[in-house]
Image (cartoon, rainbow, N blue to C red):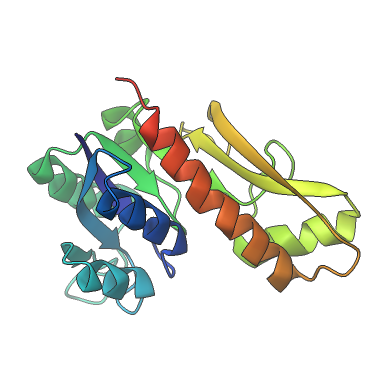
Amino acid sequence: MIKLAVLGSTRGTDMQAIVDAIERKELNAKIEVVVSNKLDAYILERARRHGLEAVFADMRRESGEKKTREEFDAEVLKILEAKQVDLVLLIGYMRILSPTFVRKYKGRILNVHPSLLPDFAGGMDMDVHAEVIKAGVKETGCTIHLVDEGVDTGEIILQKRCAVEPTDTADTLKAKVQKLEGEAFVEVLRNWKF
């Protein structure tokens, strides 16, 4: 069984596909903990609804001063180490991981990007879909890749594709790509070899 940690800052739509696959016994995995840097991120509520441990990791010190990336990541690492997770999944995680974090889980951090990398690397969420439409490309999709110390530069594990229709908006494209993202994560996890 693969022990997973999910880091997310948004709704966690892709996590739902993983939860559903686990519940249907199609995926031999367990989500040990879901961590968010946003107190109101729906991914935490989604986790609680499925009986998963949901942790808000505050990016501010008690004084109100913002923690450094390294300080914040050290706290998240403690949470993950206590759970002895095998893989870390970044699902709508709107933070760049510190080099220390990446080295600790080298080869075991997976991110989903809402384009066919290397195209539209570095962008996030709706900005990527808007750029895809603006560029006039006929095909887009998602990429599951390993996280390294760069931004969207890690080894590509899987890509799934869909057509960009002339009538697509950033919202409609996001919906199509998100469906692919969940499918891609489940496929990668089902075939994961340590």
